[in-house]
Amino acid sequence: MSARPGERPGLVSATGLNLVGPGAPTPADPARSDPARSGPADPARRGPDELRALAEAAGRELEGAPALEIARWAAETFGDRFCVTSSMADAVLAHLVSRVAPGVDVVFLDTGLHFPETLRVRDEVARTLPVNVRSIRPRLTVGQQDGQYGPRLFNKAPDDCCQLRKVEPLERALAGYDAWAAGLRRDESPTRANTPVVTFDARRGKVKVNPIAAWRQADVDAYVARWNVPVNELFRQGYGSIGCWPCTRRTKAGEDPRAGRWAMFEKTECGLHV
Image (cartoon, rainbow, N blue to C red; front, side, top):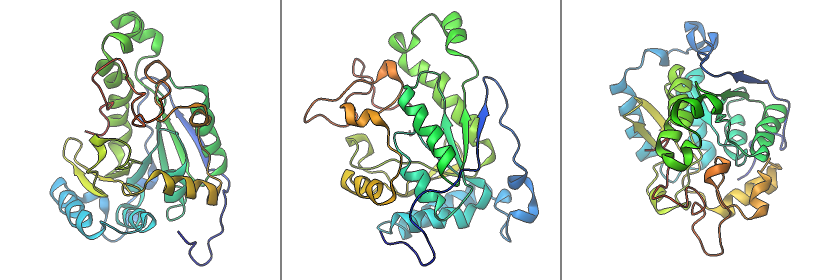
């Protein structure tokens, strides 16, 4: 992928790390509520039917388009009502979108159960990229969850644990947006093989954008090498996919990259991407 005229490769200063504590409401963002900054179409006034139509048309028109073009469409279409979500396995998506939307919000779900290496990527992204990292925490701390549901809920009922520590926080975090970008790729697992580049998330009533859906691991590696993007150190230690530490193991040779997630259960997704 070639740089556009005037673009400079590399990373630049961050706009900040916005930590949102347990149970705290998501802070209002004046940029998303000020009509003067919404643009002539005023995306704040788009209803679900219009968002669905936008997503369906873009899904057709942008299939096969470069990832940067898909990201640019989302940024230009939704303005401040568009954000990026990142698990901080790497900073590829955050970096990509920041090239067309400097200052974009990057939502990170701080479950309280992440590897230290994952939190280091988050902090590096906040420090080195022109993005606003919003670190969203569950309503309950891990200790409070243990007291209410019993210890190690992730071992007994991983779906319930994911609901409490990932799904509900994401619903809260996305409240002020009409569209969000995720780093899903079709080559990651059979369950993601048909991931569209743009779709309508009917459950949330929002447009979901997957700019790198068509990328393969080689594309990710090339992007990381070219732009010196932060990557989670655990990949070098044999992990194929990285989530919360209790539910993630190293993958074996020949395994699906996500085989190390919830390996003791018939579970392949946390519930964020259904």
